View 1: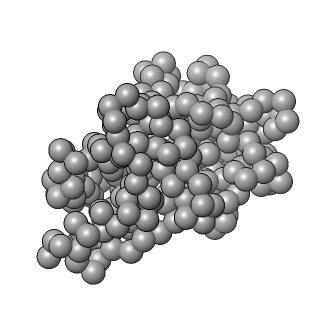
View 2: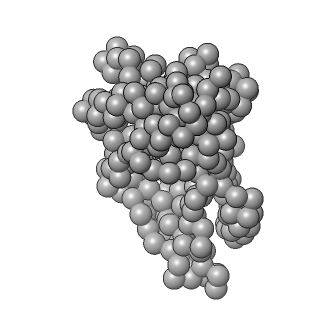
Length: 293
C-alpha cells in the first residue's frame, strides 16, 4: 500500500474547470457561426478537443476547411474544387473577423493560423481539402516553411478516444500528467512539445497505463527512457509519417527529454515506496522539479 495519495498526484493532471470549458465553447461556437457552414467545414483539434488540456488552458484550435478550395499539392477532388492562393485563403477568414465588431482588431496572422484573442485564445487554422471537406486528411500551410502539409484532426481524435477506451480512461489522464511534468522541468517547449508527448504516449503499450497516476507515470516513463530513437519511429496517431525527424522532434531534443525523465523517475519511484505520506509527497514534488500541484 503506497503512502502516495493518488488524489495528490492527479492534481498535476487536473483538466480545465467547467467554467473555462464553457467560456471556450461559447467563443468557438460563435466563430464557427461567423464562418458559416456553407463556406467552411469547421472542426476542433488539439488538447481542448482531445481532453488532454491542463487546468489553465487558455487556447482552442479550430480548423476551418474551405469547402470550395482543393489542395494544390495533395488534392484529388472529383468535385471541381478551385485552387486558391494561401494568402487569399487566410485573407478570406481575416476579412470575416474584421467585419464583426466582436473580433475586429483582435486577431493577428501567425505562421499556420490566425490567432483571435478574446479572453480564451482561438487559433483558427485555415485549411483546404484533399478529397473532401468532410474527411481527413486536410491540407494546412506554413508561411515560414512556404509549403503545404497534410493534417488529420478527425483521425487523431478518434485514435485518442480508442486509446482511452483501451486503457480504461487512463491514457488522457496520463498525457496531462506528462504535460504538467514537462512544463515543470523545462520552459523550452521544443524539448517535448505537447503534441509530440501525446503522439509518444499513444505509441506506448496499453498495459503501461493505470488510473493510479504514479504507477502510470513510472511505467510509461520507463518505456520512454528505453525508447530507441533510430529503431522505433513514432507515428502520428491520426495518420501520416513519424514525428522523429530532423525538422520535428530531432534526436538531440528527444534524448534530452529522455534524460530529464530518467532523472525524474528516480524521485517518482522513491515517492511510491516512501514510508510516510510526507516523504512520499516530497519525493513526488522533486520528480516535478519542485513544482507543487
